[in-house]
Image (cartoon, rainbow, N blue to C red; front, side):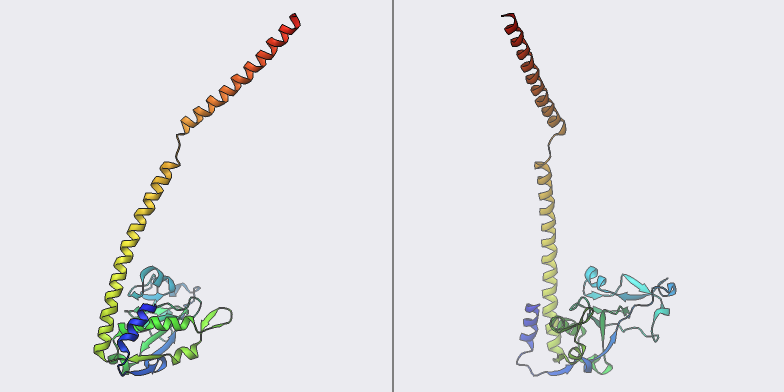
Length: 247
């Protein structure tokens, strides 16, 4: 994400901006996993419950989860609000997504929801893009216990700029364009790679495929030829032996 970092920093450099910490801007809540032993939590679910698999399979702006839970699984009866950001702060660290619907997430994610007084001060996609820098920070600031985890004290103090709405909008416009271009190039390269792979497999199979019947025939011919040679040799030996006896 170095190019992304440079793009953001270039746009905000030399522009006076206010900076606030994560704990000042966001309500910070941990995700959780409803008890798997309680079937009621998992049957006929309607609430999206996000895991790392959702990011891996469906990207980083999400409105649907691979798994859902029922309302009875809610703690305190509250969902995480739409337009929150989930960021992995344990196990697989340094991945995040923007969630555009009310939801729950598992315990691997820390959930960042804008406080009411900051909702009008941020373009949510600006925060989504800025979290790529937060991802990098998380990867470099971990503590080790039974598994890797982010230093949450430092996490809460991580600072985020608050540029003017027009600068935020311009940053989002530019990075959206880069994202779209990257997606197009990735799709084209993936298609090219798929085609080349099929081409390779075709020629590999063609070059390494031999006619089994012909091969067997040649083998029979070679075997038969060697048998003839051995038979002929023995006959010659016997004939030669008898000739010697007659002499």
